[in-house]
Length: 119
Image (cartoon, rainbow, N blue to C red; front, top):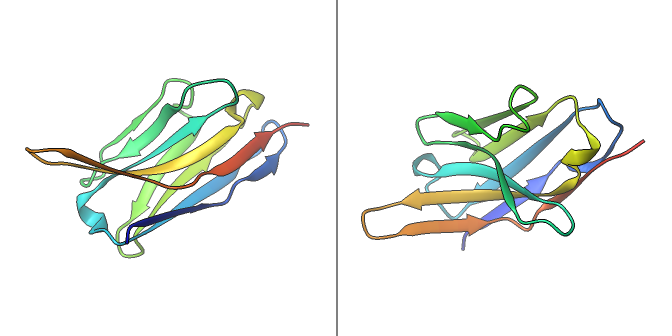
């Protein structure tokens, strides 16, 4: 059974920092592209950042320079370090594991962790 379990969310003041973690089980973690998405109230889910199996990274323009995604293949965990947080970063953050084969794309999702940036 595949599980992606996020942790590390919470309430933080503007300008503050948080580190999200996503622990994966039930998949061969090394093969998967791992990503973080977020969904704010009334908005569509959007990509925040992803890291490929070879550790290539990509970021949404709104977080570039403030957020850092990383992975630890020995711990089957992906992280999102978030610095200089803004109220617009408030959202539920979801972990994603994606494997693309010639036949199909396999997607798994976590249940999400709430991040609230407010004074």
